[in-house]
Amino acid sequence: MTTTETVLDALRTQTIELPSWAFGNSGTRFKVFGSPGTPRDPFEKVSDAAQVHRCTGIAPRVSLHVPWDRVDDYGKLAAHAADQGVSIGTINSNLFQDDDYKLGSLTHPDPAVRAKAVAHHAECVDVMRATGSKELKVWLPDGTNYPGQDDLRDRQDRLAESLQQVYALLDEDHRLVLEYKFFEPAFYATDVPDWGTSLLHCLALGERAKVVLDTGHHAPGTNIEFIVVQLLRAGRLGAFDFNSRFYADDDLMAGAADPFQLFRIMYEIVRSDALRPEPRWDPAGRGVNFMLDQCHNIEEKIPGQIRSVTNVQQATAKALLVDREALRAAQLAGDVLGANDVLMDAYSTDVRPLLAQLRESMGLEADPVAAFKASGYAQRIAAERIGGQQAGWGV
Image (cartoon, rainbow, N blue to C red; front, side, top):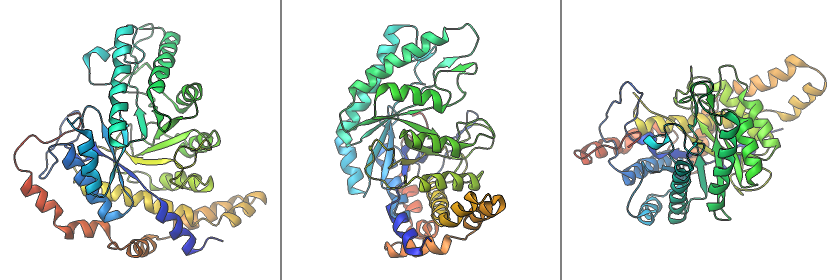
């Protein structure tokens, strides 16, 4: 039987990594809406991420994106993060905003273009060394729009060769996480469209290559928790990109569209003992890196991140409250409705008082959103950041 203290102890170990780009001006292909206090450079993005950590207590890392977060001195940026009470997390490469990559990057028919894409990852690894990051994330937008446009087998062979070159760049304490997406921007055949393709390439690379699962990168109706189970069984679930979707890759706040799905995912994480943050690189696949990947279009950026962090935290708390002994007994007895009731009882629990208790025990305010509003941070950055070019998604 799970006790309150057991749940609180587990929740104290949970961390969630924030994306730097979520704090800049972001939106859709139709419109990007500006807002007061938007960061003007990566240093201010890190400061905003640190404010989320101050309010929630569980967001101590910030993902960077190259070249969006390119600076002259990455050591200085890492020192700034440390001064703010956070650290630099995953380094994300960019293979989708260069004209040379029109027909592909790591899969391009031209060896010179593939070499350019590999060299970009060498730059990212240099950033990892300068900032203390241990993780390189690769999302590959490569693919084709028309049958016959390129040879599908050749593209997979090129990808395997290019990924081997990128993997060879890593230090022994680094790992590579490979993302997948079933469509967009390629509409006929995406080169890494699903978890199986990502897994096959990771298995070929080595034990420090893992799959990253973006919750928005699946067809409607996909059973994402089943994918989580399979990747955990293989020891190859490296990271999550948490967000919500209604239609496609909507990048909405985590838990906004389907909080029950988020609970089901987190239950499988808890059930497989994969919540623990360390060691992050172990072959058994534990220590999954929980990250957010979101595009705040109309909502305020910092409160939006706080909401996503607390939504993941609530789903985790509910997952930890599942009476696993009762669930197992019902499953073995063939008690279909009884087993479902055990899960639903945990999901229906109001865990907000429990999380308020957790935060107060950590020296934090019980309500992170109220704490942010009371801090005066939003008003201060709105006044201080007048003038200059606001940082935006893709900038």
